[in-house]
Length: 222
Ligand SMILES: C[S@@+](CC[C@H](N)C(=O)[O-])C[C@H]1O[C@@H](n2cnc3c(N)ncnc32)[C@H](O)[C@@H]1O
Image (cartoon, rainbow, N blue to C red; front, side):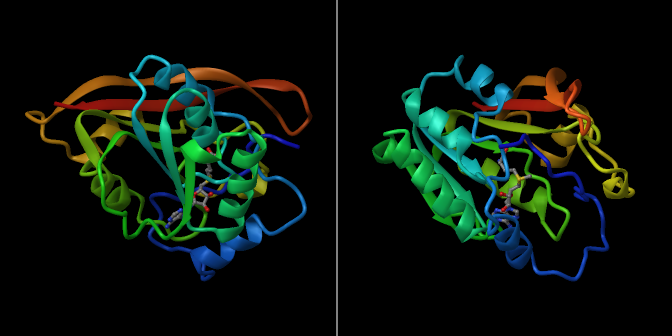
């Protein structure tokens, strides 16, 4: 089991590789190994712990670590991912954790964000080396936040220390301010709660512990 090993995010690129996103991600989650750690992202657990549990939607939930943590901590959580393989893994992990009743997973392309409103909408490392209309999806997702609810976006501040040099193409990572600006939120309807970089420890390619910064944006709908 290894940590986050994805590296080739190109969220701002206009020239995407040819491969269709669904094929890329199905293949990614189709191998014998778990792709991510299975553990909750630290930013998610730190921040969601401060909120009153309700309903939650996780965009690009992968193998479900964040959704399962939310389900274990009082939330009714739904995770969506384009990859059926990922959703199958997440569903099995939720069953193994005994939280099937509180964790729902759906295989779908978020280019069509499903209807409904949630007390928390969250996106952890919603990056992709293949085509992803990230800004459009995140903007649409803001309309799925219930009044009084929150949107939490956690993203990479830079290439992770476990990334291969060959992965480090011309991607520019967003600052917390840029991430917020992209959302284009109406200040009359939204309150900025957190926009900052947070450091945590991860593992470098050498296996050594190494620090990594996350960009964290938390906004609250009035
Ligand atoms: C870098 S992974 C992050 C996974 C998980 N949130 C985590 O923190 O471990 C990005 C995820 O977004 C999903 N994804 C990419 N494009 C998508 C789309 N258009 N609709 C839904 N999910 C998508 C991928 O399948 C992948 O699981």
